Image (cartoon, rainbow, N blue to C red; front, side, top):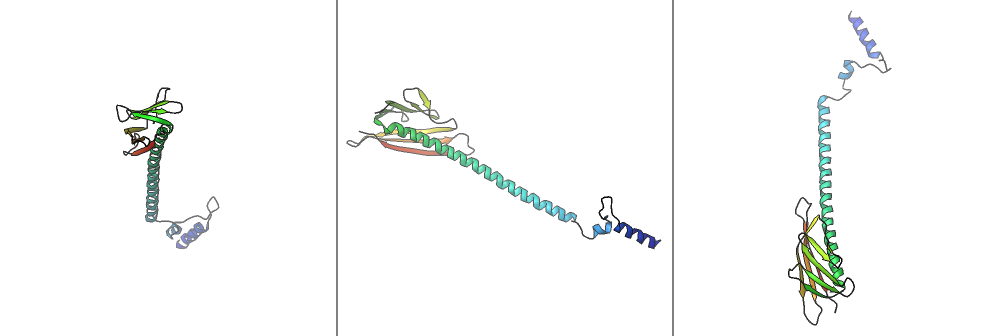
Length: 186
């Protein structure tokens, strides 16, 4: 009986399954031809740690890119406002500050002959004879706009403009200071 049982085991060991592959017996599995449960759990843990680290890095990269984009937008808004003020002052012969430090009226040599800048809430407005227009976008707020005129004859009058731009749609309070100094032509 024992001999028959050993013979049957050898037949099973050497037999092929339906796909033509050798059949697997309990002894073959026990011989170490696979991973243990501990090894599988360790690999899953390492994989989870790797994926978690990569997701953290990706999130930080996206967040920092968003903050950089908002800083660039803030700088572009400020540069645009500086260029508009520079354009108005470049061809000017006289300037008069208004009743508020944020108002200035500029008399120019070339059309438009009069340009007026003023602060209206969060916006810098320009009036060049074709109506009042907001110069900055709704994503930013202009604060502390001040025009200062300094006269020192016989030298030309000096006009200085200072303002801060604040980002309205930023997570953290981001602001930037801008300044321009121009001398009027005589």
